[in-house]
Length: 327
Ligand SMILES: Cc1cc2nc3c(=O)[nH]c(=O)nc-3n(C[C@H](O)[C@H](O)[C@H](O)COP(=O)(O)OP(=O)(O)OC[C@H]3O[C@@H](n4cnc5c(N)ncnc54)[C@H](O)[C@@H]3O)c2cc1C
Image (cartoon, rainbow, N blue to C red):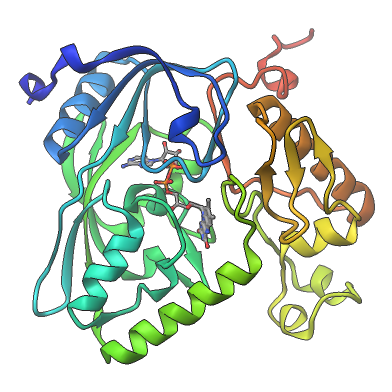
């Protein structure tokens, strides 16, 4: 397996901003593109067995790399194969675009992934954050995932990833090293016209609600708290009933729309989008996110949790985590 790695293709000090939809951040210490599951597996097995740092990226639509860069090897996974069996079983490389997975399955007469339209990430990135929209999420359709874990390549059930709302095992603090290579999912048959009509409707809603500037989508997770939801006069009834408080409502009601820090801004169109409007550095964006969290906490008493994942060294923002005990 290790022979599949072409070390000659590893680049040094590769800027990561072009690989992040926020268009910000420093460089990868080393960088390579993996174009097949075997290539990613070989890298993951080597890194896990030999103990060196490796970060896998899909489309970079849910990450913010530090301006100081990302240590170790960054692998962009671009394996793209998707096949659909007549019985509704779908096999896909985790480097495939989530939107292509929707298109191929819809064209094959299957339904379920309409919500993926407009989510600009890879299937692997979608699994890590249990990507979802319009009351659906990717984990609902999974049958099994092929991973490299503890240096071993194997198929695991969905329970292995401990999915919950926009969360999985791989988002926890100090997550286990795990590369996701391929997946199998099962979808139901659907009427093509209904499937495409629903997808078009979701796409229209996104176009009207989402800012066109560089972003990572919703920066913060929504807050799930029935009592809190019911205490908020400004919240529409449907959210009060479900106990879901969209982070965007809290940011908007705290008066933060249009707030800027350097080249980063809280979007006026969708308050949960932090947008890069003028060459923002990753530090600008993180500083703005911290400001938003502080103001929302001061106004409503809740701490927003990031949906976006910070990569690399952020010790300037997390001093207590990095300072020796007692200092
Ligand atoms: C305009 C816009 C709209 C969006 N709308 C939505 C939405 O409606 N719903 C939603 O849930 N999200 C949304 N997002 C966020 C994002 O697109 C999703 O989270 C997406 O699934 C991330 O995929 P990615 O390939 O870009 O992941 P990346 O950002 O590349 O990576 C995210 C994380 O996954 C890890 N990772 C990626 N691939 C692998 C792999 N193969 N194996 C192991 N780890 C891996 C990375 O290391 C990183 O920790 C939106 C983003 C944008 C910019």
